[in-house]
Length: 109
Image (cartoon, rainbow, N blue to C red; front, side, top):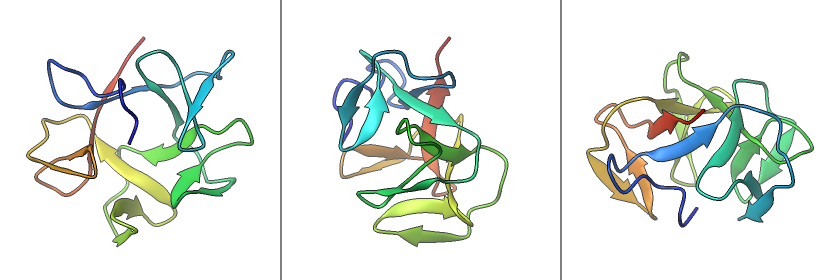
């Protein structure tokens, strides 16, 4: 999932918090050339089990809310995807996970 959006250096999912500009879509999620668009916002809907924050297809994420459950193998903090800026300790379906069970992400400018 999200090929080319995982950092070869850190192993984390690269995310960008800005409005998508001519995005490509990977698994129904707005992506740039080497990152996934994501916002800290309530979800607008769900695509392939992933919460999206707006009709533009950005991931709905939270880096501060606690992990509450897993849905289709994705960690959720209530209704948004739980993630943190930390090193991955494991991978599942090509996605990096931290020791706390959240998605391992790095924010790109």
